[in-house]
Length: 177
Image (tube, rainbow, N blue to C red; front, side, top):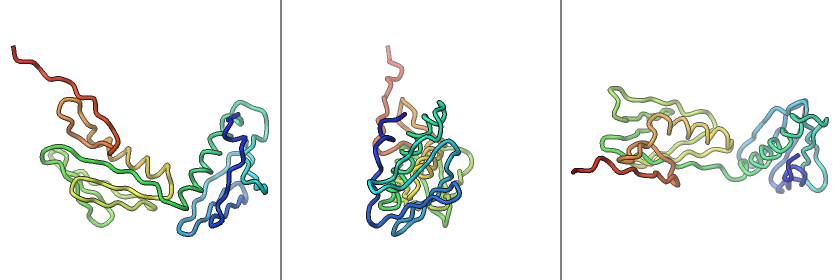
């Protein structure tokens, strides 16, 4: 079992956590997040905090204990302060526009690439910098990964979509003899 799952998870004063009918509900001042609880996991509220324990001693239950403890921590953190991902677009002619609830990319293809912004995520575009914010860590990270996957950065010129903290290892091109 995970060492982090053995420790109780502290709940801030502004956040309420409930478990009803196999559903975990984390409610903050701005957002409310829900997650289904697996049958092998038991989540209970104690005076020290939230405890995530396995119901039985199977390998799956022990593995899911640490996973669900991490999910609960992320949910508690997300309802207080939203998670943020920043993507940068590099390349001549590469650009992005925010049109309503869609991101429209020009990435060197013969057509524009249109992506619908999921519910619970707010996107802002300044020049070629996309900032994604939301309470659900998994949703924000997944949408950022899908955006990056439209045109990954290439190692020769560094063109493409990359995370702001990502380092691209550049390769040397052909040498003139």
